[in-house]
Image (cartoon, rainbow, N blue to C red; front, side, top):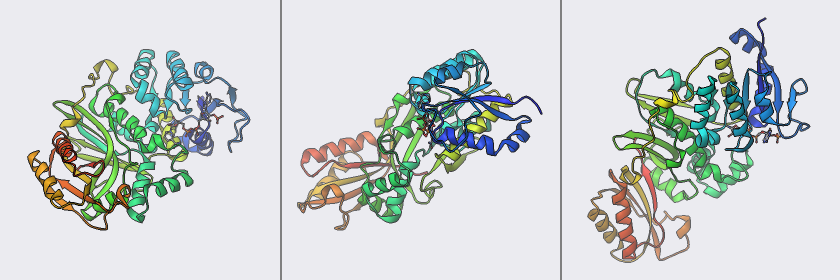
Length: 437
Ligand SMILES: NC(=O)c1ccc[n+]([C@@H]2O[C@H](COP(=O)([O-])OP(=O)(O)OC[C@H]3O[C@@H](n4cnc5c(N)ncnc54)[C@H](OP(=O)(O)O)[C@@H]3O)[C@@H](O)[C@H]2O)c1
């Protein structure tokens, strides 16, 4: 049997602990595929004594993950601690500076420091695998770095956060409130005790930033993403959207145009007939619009120990085989500087939920303001049973839903400012962009 491929793992939590188990359970299959075994030489975590449900007694122990990363006894360093900076960044940096390949699932770190890490990997001639960082078990990084050849990608979009997809699917199917769905997701382990990172859209934004770079061969720019979360979505929105043939999803979308790159994460109405509409629950879906392959859709589990550890292992095997690919698909010097396309120029249809004072002429005045801004309306819904939670109990306010034809966001915002100035709106309007995939 050939020499084992020795790895060090820092982080033995949900993903790291599962990776230890899979490497042991699948040892024979791994050896067969690789031609040599993968051996865990050393590990690091905060607590040495915690029961992790896996036997770590045969591995060297490091209190300091940076020391493990520098160890000359490993051929690859796996970072599964998490955190944008701190020990994860220090350990990855130490490994790459020593010329040791790195595999990580850390999207937060890559979104913030991906360029620096990619430069270090290139300088040291070491590989950097991060399949697990985007959409957990879905091999989208491999598809982008290797599978699509010379295809030019024009747009990437999809559901990149399982917690949000679960909540929105459950709200639509079972007609329960956002708060109840969130509490249930926490009970089932689909949402963290502090869910803000997921439901405010930041987790999806990290993944989108990484995808955007790979899709458009541009530098990573997570700070240039327009981010809105799902906590403002009401049952009234879900029902009105459903009546009109749409579902609401939290989408990450990046588009390339002559003006630059637009990256956004926000709740979006998509037709129930679109290919990704039926991908519900905790699953993720990523769609790539390309010239040669047209539309490619990848769907599957976006998180969870098993799926994520499987992606980590897939990177480990690739690197052990000697498969060398630049971390971001191209040498860093060839990536284009990131140029942001203005969001206010975004073109599309819009869903607008207004809380309107119930006085004669209010609806006509609203329609006039829309017309003045050059916006034509596709549908107007005003039903007594459509009451948003924020206006429930206010007898003098009515919920009105407007669907616009294709227009630009600047015009919609101008019309809404005029409607507010006229005094017809009883609260903040809810604006949800529509995409017709
Ligand atoms: N969970 C998922 O479904 C999922 C999906 C995709 C990507 N990811 C990414 O995978 C990474 C790990 O996530 P996870 O869910 O496995 O996290 P987790 O369950 O919280 O585990 C984190 C591990 O890191 C260890 N750790 C933390 N700080 C450390 C330090 N200073 N020194 C040494 N060890 C330290 C912890 O040690 P103790 O156990 O001793 O406390 C723990 O074992 C994150 O970057 C996350 O974003 C996770």
